[in-house]
Amino acid sequence: MQPARTLAAALAEGLVVLDGGLSNQLEAQGCDLSDELWSARLLADDPRQIEAAHAAYVRAGAQVLITSSYQATFEGFARRGVGQEEAARLLARSVELARAAGEMTASEVWVAASVGPYGAMLADGSEYRGRYGLSVRELERFHRPRVEALAAAGPDVLALETVPDMDEAEALLRAVDGCGVPVWLSYSIAGERTRAGQELAAAFEPAVGSDQVIAVGVNCCEPADADRAVELAAAVTGKPVVVYPNSGERWDSEGRRWLGGATYDPARVGDWLASGARLVGGCCRVGPDRIAELAALAGGGRQEFPGRSG
Image: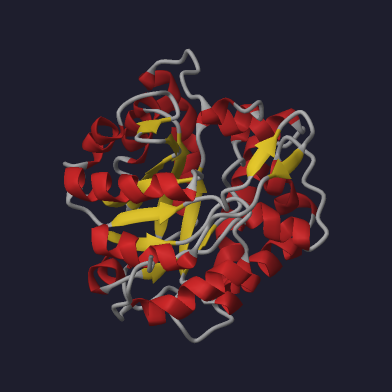
């Protein structure tokens, strides 16, 4: 069942709560994600686990569910022997599973179909560097078939997320043009720059003139880096800002473990809201418990609440 309002209309009325990290919730459910397809493998092998992970966030109060298609691509599925037709069906399934989980509540829940960067398909960490050696046109050709398959499945919005550089953002905006689905554009950043090193203010500019882009912002970054990014996104674009950082823990690729403590603080949202954020949640290692705290603070997305004290 589609929500009564568009997500854009909801953002105009107040704060909307996103879900948290899908992979950490799947791991908490006992799923093995040690595969190049990551959580996308479960679209074929155990889709009930994906729906259960989405449902955990619905129970926590999330109003937007991001699909398990971040690392799902025709090329990635082909390496596993999955043909074009079946791959398209699995991409559509990612939307269907999120929609089904959203229907467990009487509240409005929107579905955001995840469109991850080219580097996510490579599964070699290049999604956090960008600059793959491909032209904008080549990146557009890569993204368009997946965009078309996801758009045909009827999501409420396409999440162009964890984008590492401006070239890929331009390619993604070209790829979604004419697909008939609104989008948000969200960069992965370090400080006030994209992962590829471009100034973040300049990176937001391509979204300014696009009515299809209903929100801009950042994700999969340090919580502290999100503070200034929200201000920049609002100032440059005048659009609602989307922000969903990581827990703040650091991934040790050699030891294959998370290091440090979590610094994600739901109370930060008061400051983000004051700076223009309207779509807020969490990314890697931010689970349902944190989203529940965020939803409680948000009060359904309509009440004013203070920022951090001290």
